[in-house]
Length: 156
Image 1 (spheres, rainbow, N blue to C red):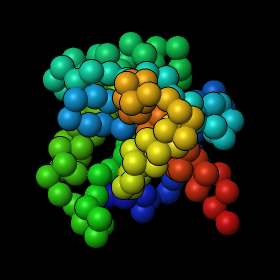
Image 2 (image 1 turned 90 degrees about the vertical axis):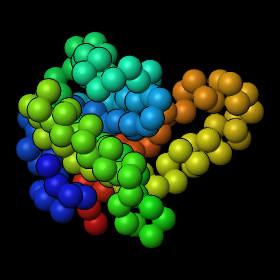
Image 3 (image 1 turned 30 degrees about the horizontal axis):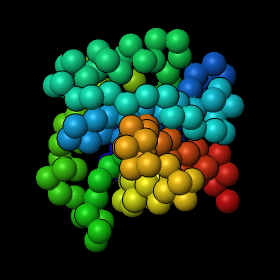
Image 4 (image 1 turned 45 degrees about the vertical axis):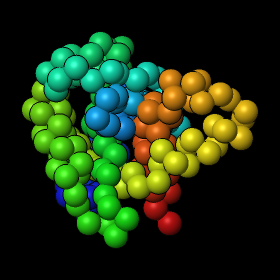
């Protein structure tokens, strides 16, 4: 597990049938997104209501049973000045549990502003705040994963 994508990227180590999973881990929910097998497009799939780390991991597994996962991209909530904070520590703890549970590699992706950007984009579509709230975390997970895919599929 790298501190913040300083290691070789996960895409280089995948075989053709594997995908990456993006997670937006919050206090109350976890947004889940998956890549396609070509590792070009991230798609939101669901949101898990948090019930405790062990139960959360089981629920994440339930949503991912049909996929051959090669690794996880987890949004890392840094402070505006890029320093780590209490929430960052909690996400790193969750990531360690996730890595142990799935025995798969993890990379972090700077998620600053991701939720705000997605919220504003969804509001442009004239969706109600209630509808946005239901989809926001999984859309944020897709945004995080898409950022990672875009960077490492086209590094130039």
